Structure formats: structure tokens, C-alpha cells
Length: 130
Image (cartoon, rainbow, N blue to C red):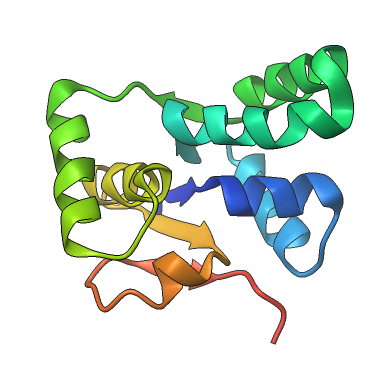
């Protein structure tokens, strides 16, 4: 069975109902084994809170916490993300998404061009409409 991991881009698209990403993320969440770094969940929060307000954002986070396996970054994961960041033109949060996926041998579901366009050997599935 393939394990999937999500970044903030995938979750935001899912919450907005943007196709085809929303359908693909929904399918990944259905098996309850999909991963996400706590760092990337924090990124979702800081992007949603100005638009939705605190109460609705908290509701979204509670729903996501029931659907995801959240990865607490260990000191090792922090250093892995820092190494990825130093070697690629990615945000630090994106580096955590990649480090989490690599640590769990998961396919990272994303449409983030920084991750998809990186010349790297991590497994990704492009969720952007083609």
C-alpha cells in the first residue's frame, strides 16, 4: 500500500474544492493513513485564519486532525528539512513537507511549483489541473 503525504498547497486546494486536487486529496484522506507535518498544518492555519477567522479555522484544524496522521518534527527531521532547504529553492515549510514524505517513504501530493520543479529525487504526484 502506498503512503501519501500532504503539503499546505494540497490541503488549501482541498478545502476550496479546487479540482482535480480536492477529489484526489479527499481520496487520500479516506484511508486515514495520509501524513502531514505539523509545520505544514501550521502553514494552513496562518493562511486560513485571516480569511475564515479563529473559530472556523479551529473547526477546519479539528476536522483535519481526525483525518490525518500528523508528524511531529523530531530534531532529525528539522535537520533533514534544513538540508533540503539549503540544497533547493523551497520555502522552509515546503522542505518539511518533503522531509516528512521522504522519512515515511510517502508520495507527496502537491501542486506547489517550488516542490514540483525542484530537480530532486523525491516522489510527488502533481495535483494541478492539466
